[in-house]
Image (cartoon, rainbow, N blue to C red; front, top):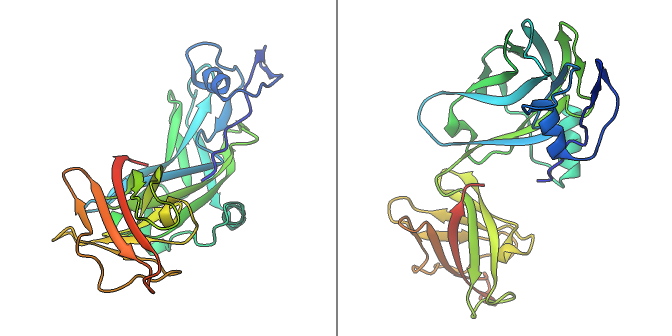
Length: 283
């Protein structure tokens, strides 16, 4: 996912906003730090215009602070500030096109409920408010969901950050294997032997993972790993190459070290793949 940093920072002369510098660190210091906070009140989405929020797969319904809104000023909000939001499909269409994606969709309304509707309140004396949703985490396993949100209005009227007044917030649930991994291939591996690189495993189901960036952590071909939670056996799917069956029984997941050791062959037996993926942290 591309990361877009805000390019605005604010200097106050009296109560006017007069110039900007291209330094996101200075931006955050001026808007939210202890010194030099701008004197012009601004409503801002700190994570915007793109963000992601992934939660663990847990039982029950959870309340999620999905999107954070800020009252950026030297003083906290002098009264309740009400922010009205709206979904904007065009934001999501542009996001999918920009990221060469087609699958991100707004989740069906029966998959979640809004805590306060399409309204966020930054309370008097506070600096932040949250767009909150109630979800059952398992409902979002393996899907590609996003909330394209735009600020519709603010009451009382407060200046909007001209860049960060809208956001596409990708949202999903991670299974317990999801994360960043160190990917190593053996000398016997076809195409890219003795590879040693970073990769990610993305949730594609309760016990199913999609290798990113793809085959051999290099090509775009999709590769999926399925882990049997009872035996820790691993099986592979590669739609473009096929996978020879029966699959190699040596393929296992080690929960103690969070390591996948995988052996498989192309469907026609033409290529051999021997891979080790070791968990390095959450993504």
